[in-house]
Image 1 (tube, helix red, strand yellow):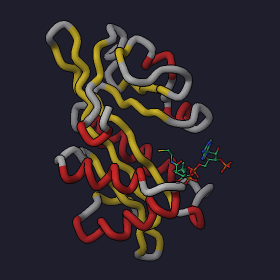
Image 2: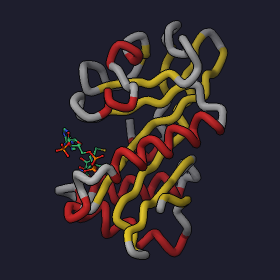
Image 3: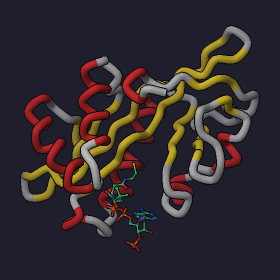
Image 4: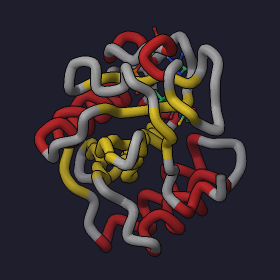
Length: 163
Ligand SMILES: CC(C)(COP(=O)(O)OP(=O)(O)OC[C@H]1O[C@@H](n2cnc3c(N)ncnc32)[C@H](O)[C@@H]1OP(=O)(O)O)[C@@H](O)C(=O)NCCC(=O)NCCS
């Protein structure tokens, strides 16, 4: 079951993040994003009533010629090691993208493994025109509005990323 994260979930979410990542950096990032009001979309996935996966999207305004395109940054996504390779991560990514689309986001941007995210439609080519702190094959975007990123623009990551 996938649902919105609630305040009572914060401790079990931290446990998932600590188990999934080698350092507490991502767990700390999630807490800073929440504290700043930048947890735009935050979902959990449950198995037998326990939280086993989590995903967060934060606002990513893209500025070009004085206009702003509303996009989202996907980071981080995690699934407990004991529950990986069962499609839970993919379900979280797809559910989150659907909500971002419904919220009017024109695009989603991710810095992630080039072998994982293309299955959801992310491509490095879509992010190429962006003026961002990242580049290369791991920096990918998914346009939810056709050609939303074609003209480029400067991306503004949420403060918690410290970029
Ligand atoms: C990435 C992650 C969320 C995927 O969750 P999941 O539930 O295992 O994902 P799915 O079952 O939907 O997909 C599994 C597929 O993802 C791919 N995959 C998972 N992690 C990957 C990685 N680090 N690099 C490349 N591919 C990866 C594999 O192709 C895998 O396929 P397989 O099952 O045939 O081996 C999970 O592996 C995880 O929590 N990893 C640690 C945290 C992390 O690195 N998060 C992503 C960066 S923000």
